Image (cartoon, rainbow, N blue to C red; front, side, top):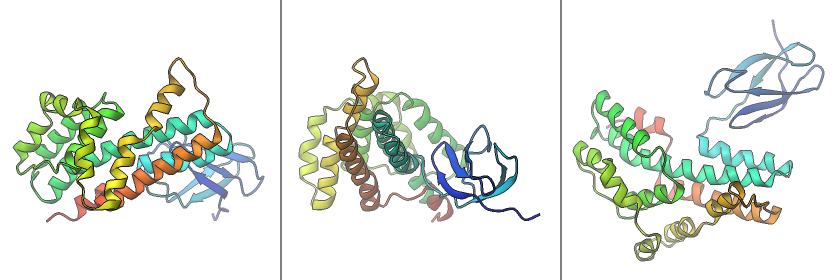
Length: 255
């Protein structure tokens, strides 16, 4: 049987929000609870929560978690939930940093066959998750800078394992933030230098801390819009300049 397609679908990190093509009521489908998948929904037949008629959903974008969190902000901003906008943006920055670290230490070495076995791949993946599980934004930023500014040389699988040793990571994550000013200023590419400066000086995580801690700070629309612009610049432009690709690229294009 052929079903009609949803109207005005919106795809967020957690939910798919769409209007029923029959009764026009708004339906919210949670990806985990209702759709039972974290994969992109290229096509799925669902049932309206009001009229119980079935219809099709399609057109879900394929993106990374940090991308979804940034795009979700626009919907949250429409609802004037500015505190949640800041939370999303701060989390997006942290996820982007961890994604980039994972690219450098796991997926790029896998592509070049520095990591050549499934057991080594699983080991490095576990070390990344376990040893950085509780890292804050500042910790992740230090490791990101060390890998992408210092171009820390990782020539063997043992180098990667040593880098991910807790003692080694503790030294890097504890670097004073001011120590990065000089290496950043020495970057020849001005656009890249400017982007690293933005990451160095971003106020988004500090604003997040004011929101979630005892201050319960309520940001203004102008603050949110400034943070959106700053986060988009840092994430999307840095990703392009550093050529950080979807992880499936590294898996499907092994040397």
